[in-house]
Image (cartoon, rainbow, N blue to C red; front, side, top):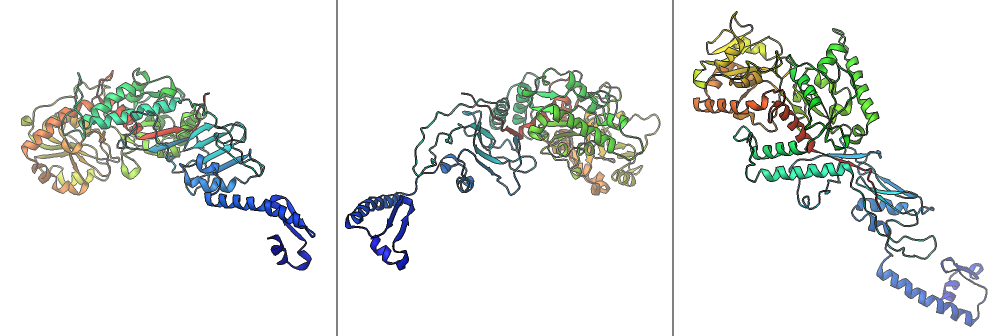
Length: 578
């Protein structure tokens, strides 16, 4: 064989043919015994080579480790030829964006997620997820001293020798030696994982409740078409009462922080802050047990004490919010862990949305609880919460609740209020002093009570002003008057639970000229049903001190609870135990 090979070479090279792979040098004139010796050596080698060709290449460590991630395979293999076997490190980003070092993964998910396996495995969390900034975290595989293997946010401890999770690896020589399998160490369940597992169980319970029997409750059982799904809402509310915990940051000083108005059109801003501060059922002092984190600043107080009147400079408010978020982000790990997705702010002032945009992640990721729930100003019903604007001039509900039966209401529709914004001028233009059935006033005549006019009316007109929210919505509900919402881009309070179409009338600006014909087209029977439903949902808008179950404080918390259920947070800082 080798004579033929050599004869095919130029004469001056026939004496020098090397087979470096087996360390044999053929040179000079070989005797017959030498040729036989070489032949005897090469035949077994050829047989072995053929056997390997048929059976396929030896198993690689890469597909064994990353069999669930085929998109990592090629990168792992191409990098495995590193000269230093103990310094193998691969960074792969699922998207085309460059690698970002994130400590957690956040994914928006609905209650409709599959529940298979969730009851048997409480830690079956979503591990293929995206951050609020739509950037996939880098998937990192390391093999070095104190190294870890990080796949989808999960760290697994690895040994410091030439082993990768106990799978056989190639030695530095030309031979392959299998490394014995090493028992995998158990990973401790983190507090965050326990928290998320509890939320997952709540999601499953809520989903199952919608197809099960109505849960009994000694205080109140939500029933009727006023609710999108009364059974799911009731179960969700009970789950909230049992599980939901809120951590209130203690940093900051009054009056801007931990304070707010309690006797004005913005009263719910101050009342919620105060009630949340003293609440013992939902507030927790242990941040690791909290599902959400409250930023207790008041936009009303920011406008009063930080903003320079008539300066048209929003900078001082913006800098105050930025400084506060930087403070809590530097002192606690929770803001950076979720990029603000499990944090919430609350504002009833018109400048609430603008204030939230002071910090990009606050506006984009955090739960914003706003009276001014305007979708044209980036309000997102999936992430944000609409809560009612309530004008508590005395700080309480004395004299505000109650009204006569439908048969004792002689006025078809009523409105009285200032002319501001784009909608109210149109309303007054068409109906001010034009019809006895449609009582529209800029100013009420002397001696006429605003609330008494509401109690005498079947429908109360609630047009938006400069901003979409109006305290007239709650005032109408308090007095048993069916609210007529005249607005654009407004998301009514608690519309994630309440079906507003069943107890209110929603109109746009273009419907104002036809207002009377629209209202009179509603049959007396349908109006009586709507009136009865208004009375039934009233408890969800009532402010109580101390709070009562299913009242406005608890409904605000429940809306925040629902948004938290729609967020999953995964921390990649996983502990390892022996």
